[in-house]
Image 1 (tube, rainbow, N blue to C red):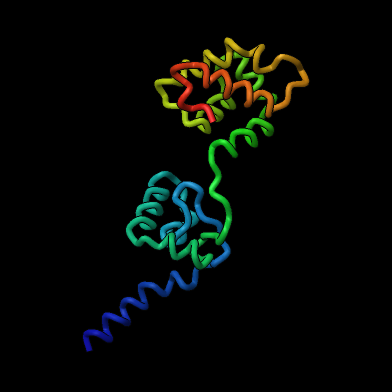
Image 2: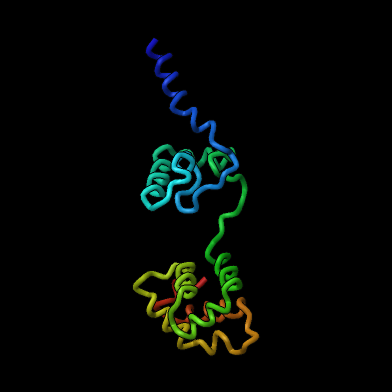
Length: 166
């Protein structure tokens, strides 16, 4: 009798998960999984932490990715910084040019984040791009790929920033 009761309680506890939409998108911070479904629609950092913790405690993301449920998608590609940086640069080339000339700004901060530059190295990065602005943008026709190639070359030549170059 106790076994049947435990089974019934377990099924009732898991039933809401079965009713969750299978096609919803996962939270980009917490990832896919039951936690993202349970806390869906809630706003604020605390709910993102709850969702990520729930996902981690139940360890259901592997199941979700394998089955395409819980807001997870099957297939897809794990993208590296090397793949994301050129896409970001192309979409934000004008703002990057402005920020690099100034040595600070939102787009430059985002680019540094994509490179994974630590806080203690940010000033060096900002100084590098500002100092070498003419090398990065030698003409008005310079495209984003040329900027990123030049930036990577400059970073590789810099002892402090070489570890971030892609």
